[in-house]
Image (cartoon, rainbow, N blue to C red; front, side):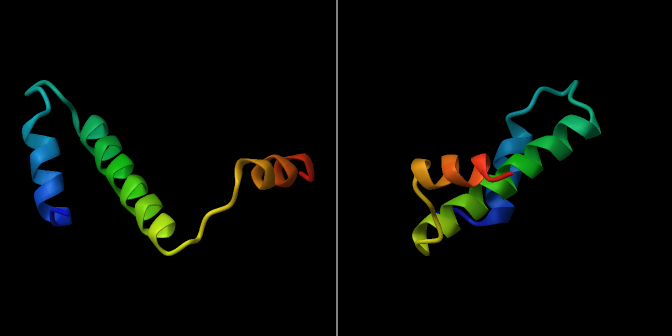
Length: 59
């Protein structure tokens, strides 16, 4: 897995020159969430789709 810094640099370098700061910040946000999701999965911190459905029903 590439370092966070390298992943961010690669993502930004692939963006069009016309992107604004909001687009860049959103891209960084998505990178962060995906990395955290992968870490949670690797640590077994996940629930099944059925468990999620039940959790949503209880709201």
